[in-house]
Length: 79
Image (cartoon, rainbow, N blue to C red; front, side):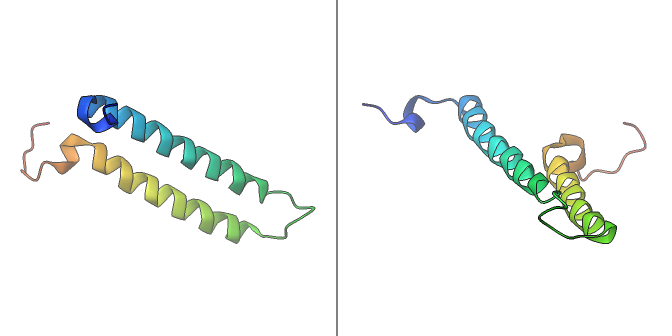
């Protein structure tokens, strides 16, 4: 039986891996949401702000990796 890497295109490999990793991220976010239960946990607005600043910062960093214009180091006033 042939391995996945032998017959798999780069696009198919990206879709397979990115789908699994995205699902893992979404599951981790759902688990984090469980921490919002004030009956079980105690936190304040600063704690929540710190959590979401970290998440937002990482999302911006990762999105920039996918942005082809951001990876172009050439300066131009034209877009």
